[in-house]
Image (tube, rainbow, N blue to C red):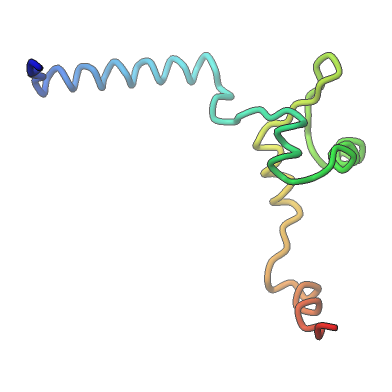
Length: 103
């Protein structure tokens, strides 16, 4: 098997071109960093039922898009939901529940 010699200038040129391509893609596809999940994906990810997800949509708990009867969710919407309902360890309700004796 033959050897390929690549000079540092050529590597730098390739890296520069890759950076340029990445910038172009980010401009053309701004949501590439925010993946889209469908109902099945989100149910599997959060281990919830279809009905729970429907309730979340109906009550405005999670942002979604609907296209031809199919629902889609951005990962950022899921993160927003989880962050909004985050319970800190310092929360008194959590502390009280943790202090209950087992039966």
